[in-house]
Image (tube, rainbow, N blue to C red; front, side):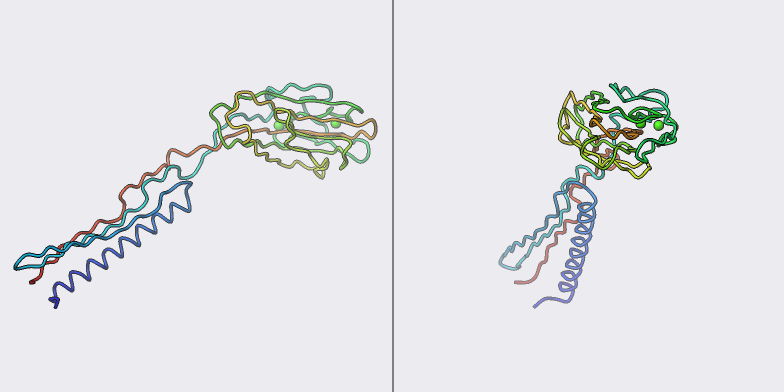
Length: 259
Ligand SMILES: [Ca+2]
Ligand SMILES: [Ca+2]
């Protein structure tokens, strides 16, 4: 039969352990849902009975260990490239119709329009500024980047496109020759942002991005205009790298009683 103080001690220990376990689990769960990696919680219990001629001694220990490590809590962006095309052409090389400068709001054929300014500032790249694009022409706007050491790469850009919702005049983005985007040809006389997942090119030393506009023999409109191109990589945010080792509680207690 247990003495009253033994029961009290045991109860207190149980409550304490339960509290610690719940606390540890909550912490682990919180970080598990917020972060990219966690290893979870661990718990266990051990009971050993020692018996002598006069006493029976029970040694119990329980533990709750929460989360061995959280490797990366949150991510940050690392800029690989960005340009608003205001002070320079952003390092792109344009062939045929591609021109760098200020669009004028030119009213083109077939009710097409070009922007009256940039998405940022006044300067953009466009397929003939102040005019319709040329028939039967392939115009390439390209630049080669180094993605060495970068991961989860994304490219964003703003486009104003009025080439007609058809398959004849094609505004496409090729990356290392692969088609990654085919614009629908009508942004509704407004700038809109396009986001492309370029993670297939993570880590490559030579990655060529080509804004490629090809026209058919007839029906020329104002075309394709680009501004604010950015390429970035998602990286673990060092400031929130957290390592939780042994969070929780280790409880050990000895209960001695007469045999
Ligand atoms: Ca601009
Ligand atoms: Ca044009």
